[in-house]
Length: 67
Image 1 (cartoon, rainbow, N blue to C red):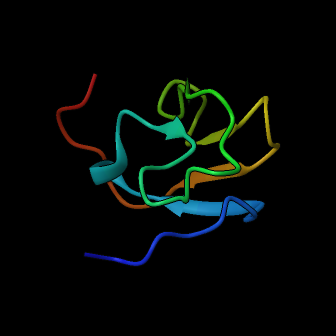
Image 2 (cartoon, rainbow, N blue to C red):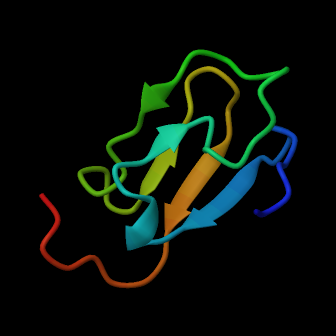
């Protein structure tokens, strides 16, 4: 099992395996999490900003067959 991360990052690169994208991510510790919010990164041209914590997500790599 991978180590849990604190929700302090302000910039996170994600790929197609992380879709549908939501913040906080599953590998973040739970004590400082805000409510889960789904982010429409594909519809927003490959970038999304979390309205709760301000973390910016950037989609890297190719997305195939995802709606």
